[in-house]
Amino acid sequence: MSLDLRYPALSDLKAACRRRIPRFVWEYLDSATGTEAVTPRNRAALEAVCLRPGVLRGTLEPRLDTRLLGQDYAMPVGVAPLGMSGLIWPGAEGLLARMAATERLPYCLSTVATRLPEEIGPLAGDMGWFQLYPPRDPDIRRDILKRARDAGFRVLILTVDVPAPSRRERQLRAKLTIPPRLTPGMLAQMLPCPAWSLGQARLGQPRLRLMEGYMKAAGPTGSTAHVGYLLRTNPDWDYLRALRAEWDGPLVVKGVLEGADAARMVTEGADAIWVSNHAGRQFEGAPASLHALPGVRAAVGDTVPVIFDGGVEGGLDILRALALGADFVMLGRPWHHALGALGARGPSHLAAILRADLIANLHQMGLDNPAAARGRQWVPDTPPAA
Image (cartoon, rainbow, N blue to C red):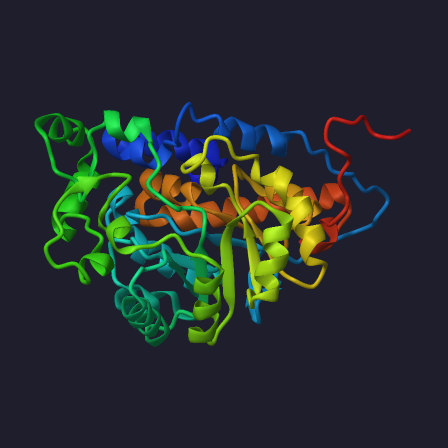
């Protein structure tokens, strides 16, 4: 049976992933903070947006290729950074980087990945982006930037919405530390997951290798206050200026929900703004990312690229975000659901699902490219005009 018949939607990959990884890993991947209210908030915001259909448009052959920050991509979709990615599936960073290079999609490696930039950069090729959790020490920052640049990463992402560790109660209940400190209960959860367990045994314990290299005596810490937090700072405007001076490629600021902040970031040298509420993993009081998107777009104007993430579950959601002002959409958890469900085959299958869904919905809207979706929404919760 073909993958498309067994796993036609992202929801199928998610369900299979949950069965194939240990529960404590699922809690790390799936959890948010507090009562996790942001997760349904993101979904409700997307589902409230209706898009205008287009009829009598004749035969269309939609093209998905998209140019962003001086680079051509196969579609307006990429892989968002996710810390400890290799905990979720053995070798996740390498598998995702290879898929991104093959599919021509951007892949963002996190500062708190389980593999080093030098290992992953060559696999991603010219599709590599590097996400920076800002180190407090300027010398460490400059060394990380040099290593990322030398490894081939072309775009730098500064994440600004993690000023301090959040409380992710499900992770605390799962007794997860970073790196994992295995308990008898965790070992029992691993037994029904042989592919995950054997893969981890082969590759070794997932660790924050880049950050631990700057802090030699790092031992297990809380899952939301790991060694990365011990070295990072909460950046300010001076930090952004310093980073702009030190990085000679495209600079993206991630975790933006306020238009005024976005406008100032552009003035200070940001090349693109990434609208995100960190999938609800940091601040339960945050608005849905989609609700913040139009205000950010209005604040920065039409020429500054705006990237979006938050609750996206398919091609229709991507078009909803593009309609409200995004130029590009990133997914984080779904690529890991695909890995958990199908291993190395999963990410390319998810890319195929997104591609087919985008094309099908562009036909329904009478459009020949995703960018043409801009402004083609009905106002959320308002019936269509007669």
